[in-house]
Image (spheres, helix red, strand yellow):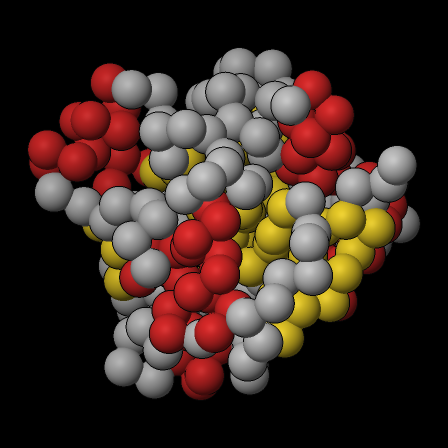
Length: 226
């Protein structure tokens, strides 16, 4: 049976259709979810896409955390539902308390949009199990508030427990602490990543190739193995 992966659309989401396409290319069935509806339609996993939910007023992701859909996402994620937050979705996960830390203005105060080299640090998650530890990939970044910050204690804990899932290689695009590009929760079902894997799923588009597709095939494998 084909896994059903929900993609939540908030006012201001830009990459929800891209995420749905990535799910389809990976072999899953994308299910469109609306931010104002608490019913997740029995999906097997959820993607929170990139964009500027609610115009990024207050702070990026700060209003989206109160959406009815997020009430259900938080509740089910704590029960083990796989959830991937991409860029703005990563910000929403932090604002919702599903992941520690916060995403703030880029250190150079400029929006960045480019292909970015990453190193996969942890394959122990529902969304990265298809990679090899230490594998280098190219995934686009496009953000103005992608600077990951957290206390020294939180950063040390993330490092010690293997919860940093990806790290920037070369020039850090936004000033993130310890070059962190993405993290996971303790259980490994919730992942937040600032680069956009849904924009690296086809050789035809862009120069990043299909390095990002593995995020989506990984969750399908995790659901089969669960």
